[in-house]
Image (cartoon, rainbow, N blue to C red):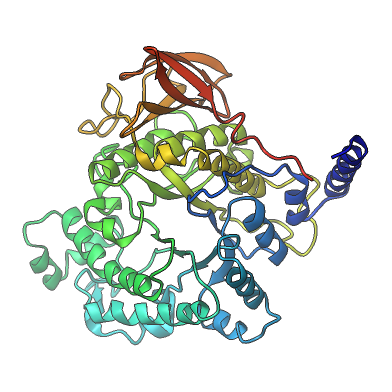
Length: 492
C-alpha cells in the first residue's frame, strides 16, 4: 500500500469512527468502527454464541464475519419454520448465508423448549406431576414417565429438522430451566409423594434428583443430537461441576451432580454472571474461585474443556452502576477462564436495552456490546493457543480449593489475594500457558512457582497477561502472547 493509500484508508477509518460516535450509532456501526480481533487461520475453537433479544440482521452477520460468533438464527420453533418458506425473510437469508459458506457463517439455534408451553403441559399424563395435598400446587415429578420427555423432544426437534433442510447447524443452545428442578425449589412437595419417597429409598435427595434429572434430560438431548449429528456442539444450561460446591452447608439443595448430568451436554457449561450469586472480581465469593471450583470437579471426571454462559453484568435498577463490571477486569477474568479450559461461551444479557433497536444505541458502544467485543477478542487470542488448550491440562497448584478441600485450588499462589495466576501444561511437551490477573488493585508484578518450569515473574494486569513458556537450557523463557498474536487488526 502506498503512503497516499494509507492516508486515505486512515481518513476513511476516522470518518467511520466519527460517524459512529458523533450523534449515536447502531450496534453495527459501533462494531464496524472498532478494531477487529485477529484469529488464527484454520483454528477449530467452536464459535461464540449469545443469549438475549434478537439482534438486527446486519449486526449478526458482522459478528459472524469478524468477531468469532456463530450466525444467530433464533429459536427453532414453528413460527421460525414458517418464515423459512419466504426467501426474503431474515431466517431464510441467514440460512442462505450458512448454506453458502458454513465455515464463515456457522449457524446456531436456540432449542425449542416445549415444556414451557401450556398446551403441551396440559396434555401430559397425571403421572407427570407431584401434587401438594395441602396447597394443591403441582410440580414436575422425579418419576415422570419417559414418554413425556420423548414427546417434548419430538416437539423440539421437528422445527429443527426444517432448519436443517435449509442449512447446516453448528451449535444448539438449550436454555433449560424447565421440567424437574432442584430440591431447594420443590423438595418439600416431593417428600409428600409416596411414589417418589419409595423410589428414592435410602439415597440422598441430591443423588436421587440428580439421577432423575439426568435420565429425563438425556432423552431430550439424545433426540437433538440424533436430529443434528454433524453439529459442533449441543450445550445444555446448565451441566457443570457446581461452582458453589462446599461453600456452605446446603449447597447440594440447589444443584445437580455433574457426575450424572455429564452426558446431557456435549461439554460442561457453567453459568457465572457478574455479581449474581457472587461478589464480583474479588471478595469472599469471587467469580474466579467459583470457576475453578467447577473446573476441578469436571477435570476429576475427565472433562478438561468447557463452554460457558457468562457476562460482566446487566441492568439491575436496584444495583445501579454496581451492576456492571469493569471491562478491563472482565478481559482478565476471561483470560483466566480460557487458561482453565474454556474454549468458547455464550454472551448473556438479561435486560432489554433501553430504546431497543429501532434507532441508535448511543454515542458510545453500550456495555452489553462491549462485553461481546471483549469476549471476541479473548477468543481470538486463545485461537492462537488452541494446541495448549486442547492438548494441555490445568495445573492443580500446591493448595486445596478454598471450599472444596478434596480438590486442588487449580491456581498458583502469588502471595497476594487480589492477584491471581493460573497455568496449563501441554501433556506431551515442555510447554506452558500462564495467565496472571490483577482482580483488584493496579497492575503489578507477581512471582509464582510452576512445577518443572520453576519460579517465574509475571505481570498481573487488570486486563490479564497471557504467556507461553518453555524451558531453554534449563531456564524458563516466557513470551507474552496477548500483545502480539491476539493483537487486533486495524480497519482496512
